[in-house]
Image: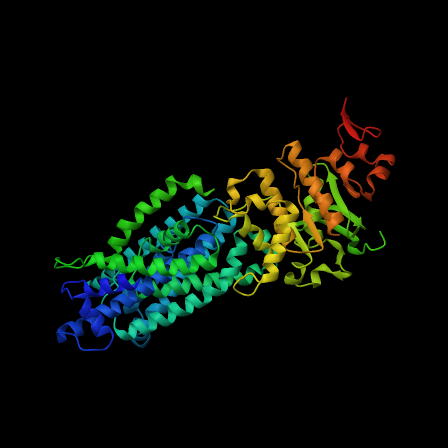
Length: 325
Length: 261
């Protein structure tokens, strides 16, 4: 992980030698002042954001996969990210319709986080209601898909009525980006991700019990309602706050838990949690490094990279699903 | 027999469902008593309410009337974490797909005792080892649970209940889908556990002839009545003949078998 972190910081439109990265991170003077400036104000926040995003999304995916007894669950697939998008679209595109003092609060980063968390919470609750009626894995996925298109439709209605400037702001947000985050946003993001991760820590034991199904879990003294509430809070805080800052990022939440299950060959959530944190951070750093390959003048949207890596994983999962049952 | 203590008892218990304001009573006025060190089997035709009775006794479902007492306390007044240390279950439902190994699955039985992270202590490991030794599963512990046969999985689930270390184990149709050899081995295991570990074990089953041979007491559910007694007494009372409505099935008391005429 350290290696990928250093690699990530050193690569970009301006290549900075690893040795210099190391130096300036440890506080000593780098060879060129511009390098140090780039590292401290651009590369380092971005790398930290990548780590936070990778960890948070992957863990929320892990929680949801056990919770919904569904190997295909994840914040993006189940439409949580689109729920967040809806929340953000409300704020970015719809703020003009509201009184100015209100819209000022909403447009601040806190307002966007709040809207985004509420959006994902809303979708998660809807899916929870549906999933209790439908036991079937596939139908839950289809419902998630429907939520995505539904929120997508509402967003297009909004965008029809909004100004070009607002629209541009929203479009850039929705492409997903972990760059251009100020240190202040990084602070807010790390606090909310840390809070979400702490809540998730409390759900590890209930999740282990849920591996045997709800009835067994109850017979082992688990308070299902409390566990469910914790899980819902943790996942919507994680998915919501991350989506607020970084935009809807695809597939990380789905693919990483599976990678860690594959690597660690266990179902114990204590081990998987740690593994998912590590792999999530590494994958996100790698994706970010790829998205701004040295030698190119431009930076690709991070979402494209994660999808290129993540979509094949999903296909592979469906094909090899036999081995899961 | 004097060391056996009364663990579960029911008083004027009525079981059934509330649905759309219609109360559907399945059985009423049940006065059952279960004591430690005894193997109980619960038999009855499909749909007569065996599962409902088990669900009510374990506190999952509320009784329509009357109460279930666990150690002379009403089961609905006891917190779930405390019940989990008194009563463990083996259910018929299919496990959700996951990567659990046999050992991890058995270790989950220790959940009521572990800390908030679910870490196993030295005592936990010892109890798990005992459960594995009692069920003779040593050779399977590293296998994934989906790699073993249905019969083996049933025994693993019993081992999980043993690891939970409760005075009572309740099993819902543990022998369904098993061939005769595995049925007998599950029954023998239950018999051994109830006499060696002084546990109170209650299971429902459709293998009535096997149950008659092995259980200390039987609870027979028919549409109108519920009987609890020793198997030989139930035979002399002719209870089994009333078990099925079908005229073509008769019970032969001398052979202890059902005969198709």
